[in-house]
Length: 330
Image 1 (cartoon, rainbow, N blue to C red):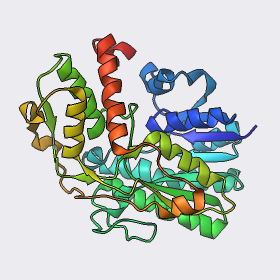
Image 2: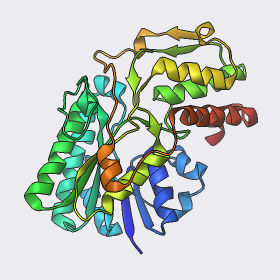
Image 3: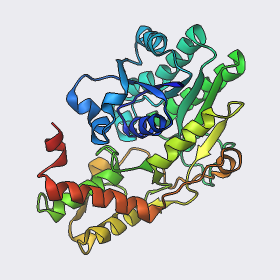
């Protein structure tokens, strides 16, 4: 049985990836940082928590990483662990750099010392490209505009360095924004779907948002974890942009979500809140997934409208049955 170690198993991607690998009869190990019931709520929501072997790991602690690798003895490692909120990286740049940047270096060093024959997937990010104006591919320059983006560039380049210097099988997935009903409320897409459901069921009367003009290439997280796995099945490691190839503004997402929720004109309940504006933001992010399509045979299955519908209907359904889904889980 093939064994996989997922660093950061409790997040959106870790949950979908666990489910994907379990269906392929993998033995799945996953790391977590916080010890609380809520920590595992996503795994519990899709009923796979009991099938994942969980290991407590701190990316700032080299010893705990080494222990996780020894304990799981994996064939594949997926490094999804990070301080992953761009907005938070402006208020906590040192923590972001340590966990997202140096944390990846610790992972690479632990692999090189303990299990250099393992295959590694490194979660890179479209935030590395910053405001580079053209459609982004694997050869586009990195011009990050946030501490998170800078840390991800460091992690990406270190992964390439270890691949070249020590012949590690280490591939980077440069994933563009990918959403789902399991997305955290810190992200604007889920905040929109969740708070629209609150408005529909009279739990609140206003939604506060930041830059509605920002455009992103939004795909479905469930599709993107398949691309991660496909990278690990190749004969040689490489880097791939994973995206839909089209971008939509926050305003487009909001307008479509409001229509699906049956709430009329979003202008009636949305207020622009400057606290959600970033010191530096990216105007438009859109990726070119041609290489992944050609070499991996991958392409997204869920389109933008289907994604928005999926998220809005999920949160409306929760509020139809529970006063507050997050209170329900605690």
